[in-house]
Image (cartoon, rainbow, N blue to C red; front, top):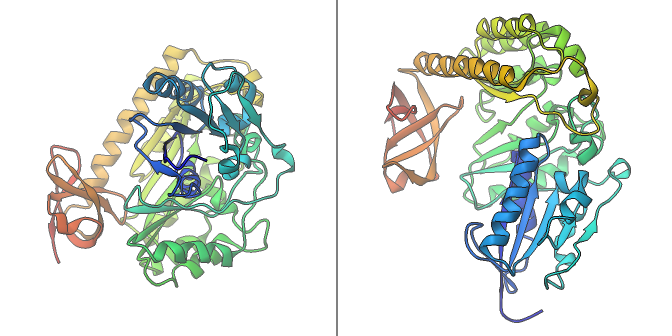
Length: 434
């Protein structure tokens, strides 16, 4: 390899798990041979870590590939991750792509880059995901105030609309001790909050005989990390023990993101979800019973095949009556090779957009109501290192975006504040307690 450093840029699409894995990949490139540069600048190599959860994600991947080719026509383009695993030939046919790596292969990316000359035909390396049993440890570092720590991969659920099991394989995780070792590496840095991430993290322990609650109990013993945040957890895996542990231990933040997907039991059945809406409601009310100011978010898919106006109204009314803090609203997107792709009674695009707008408005109302309930309360905020419109900003324990007039000394620190009002930016203003 040439003694001149190659400039390499990374671009991530999708979830927190992808960000953790991109960061892990980037650290595998030796600094004596590679210089990491921002993705919006000219580079010799671009690595695009892809998502394929929706057709929009696929489109964004193709757009990113074309953007980087235009930015640096002679650059070596490597496309990796979920989309690359599911549709390697589709990606390799895009002019300018040089390398396509599947889910396992991407963690050995440096071995595929011994020669970074442009290719006339893209190389494709992709495993049989159904046979994979490996777990590739990953955590993010250097990009954010928080670190995303991967604790689980894959999924056994087989929801009728989802391609993730086809892209990532069955549910698996390492032993608790291995996760603890990764978390201790993070604790040696100046990161003070770890976000636990995976495809289905509540399923942690299925392959090792452990439990997610057991993992939490060990993680909070680590010195140097002050906050652990659970990224997302299925309602049927959110146990009373996890909720009570969160209430008892300050290190586990009172913030739960729980996928609902629909407030109609009929649609949940068509989606092949593993619960009914009453279970979801019971989890939300149990959280609020013992942690009244906990932040609770939910994912909702709008316009699933067979969703009538009555079904949508069921969802709207169900969500209206729940003490949720915000919603993540997704418009249903058909994915190839899924059961949902062939279901009848498709919802017209315009109707899906209308329903999506209605739930987005409901989410905005819930966010404002939740913020107002927190006025006058005292909470901890982890301030980020970047300046935003003259403010230092960060998230409270219960996931409210907070602002304070810029002070460089706040960057990267956890400070106790009193929440005052909702500002013009939509964030909450605060007074420092200390």
